[in-house]
Amino acid sequence: GEPGFSARRPSGGWKAALTGRLESPPYDMSSNLCPRALMLLALIALLAAGANIFGEGVTKPKEIAIGDPAPPFVLKDQNDLEFSLGTLTRNGPVAVVFIRSIDWCSYCQLQTVQLSQNLPKFQAAGGQVVMICYDAPEKVKRFAKRRKINVPILSDPDSKTIDAYAMRARIGAGDQVGSAQHGTFVIDKSGIVRSKPYLTSFEGDAAIDALVGALKDAAGDRR
Image 1 (cartoon, rainbow, N blue to C red):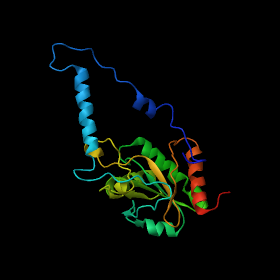
Image 2: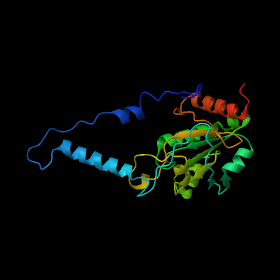
Image 3: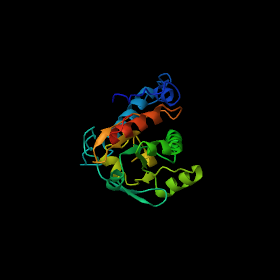
Image 4: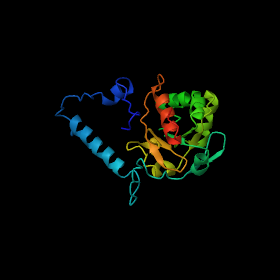
């Protein structure tokens, strides 16, 4: 991880749910396939779907590393305002925060509220924050209005920007296909990725302080 920006994943809650073990029922000789075999077949199908998540003949985008130029984008926010990376970086460093969904991801909703509430801190650090999700504009508008969100939430319903940053989630089915992984890119005024702080907590100030520090570093004003 980046010096000064490391953060541990939470030890309980959603992580415990993700790492919890599934207990298989005992083998039933009367069935054509035992439950374990069915589970194995389901896993193979899921992995196969994940392998083709970008479509036939489409190469998975290369991961964006620190020091790489950030891929350009032009997207609209909840107020129908158009944001481009070039315009944003002319005003200072920007944190581009990818979230899975503003519609069905509770963690994403809490993170968005936290970032919106702390927007003055990011601005005082000379930086900006925008969020990107694959949700349709009407879903973004509905959430932003209900929760009075001030930070721009940019809608990427075709997942083109998500794919350009190699942030498409590896697992997803149905309406979740095309959603992003959680991730943050701090980009300086020259359009270069300066850091990728791993921000997980929406409780307390650790994640906010890390992002403020990353923006200050990108602005050349670490104090």
